[in-house]
Image 1 (cartoon, rainbow, N blue to C red):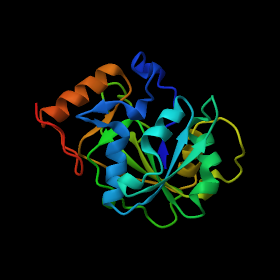
Image 2: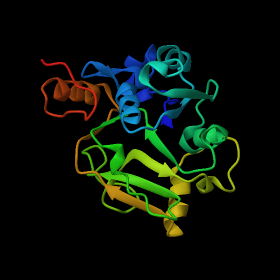
Image 3: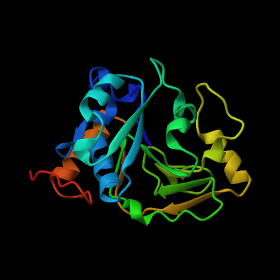
Image 4: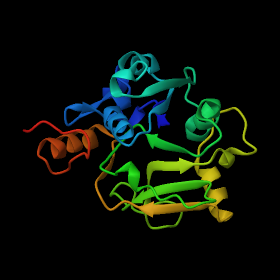
Length: 219
């Protein structure tokens, strides 16, 4: 599942007319990097949640056929449901097995075949070094959650419809010894502001970072 329903408030004015996952860096839309990685690694069935300017995402990506994927959409309405609320609403589309989750507003060179989820984990997170804007990290681990995870539907036991965040559910899994993680030492960007988007675009065009599937234009 790709999370794409956010309002993109920190990215305004860029997101006034374009949803954040459709913004470009290195000559490609942010979401295209995810779709290319999913197709490369044989993860052909994709669910994308939609809210703010969601119709533009649907119109742009369609059914996913040109990416070699099958894309379905989870419509949240005019107000996003939050990460956990959106995931819960999409569970009927995701099925009963653990599923991969990608934040739509990150860029990374992480190879999806490197995921190492141990048996019994309800939430397996990919962690990265703390960026300057998030120096304390997450969950007391001294690292930052990358926005890449494998979640078991049982993580949402006891939940219901509504808007709510994911962190309390992850905290619950951690306390129960049912959360696992691995560190990605490579490139990762939380594309949360226009400045970070511009910096990522420059890094890609200069070849300072490279995506394992999609190449960036030179210069």
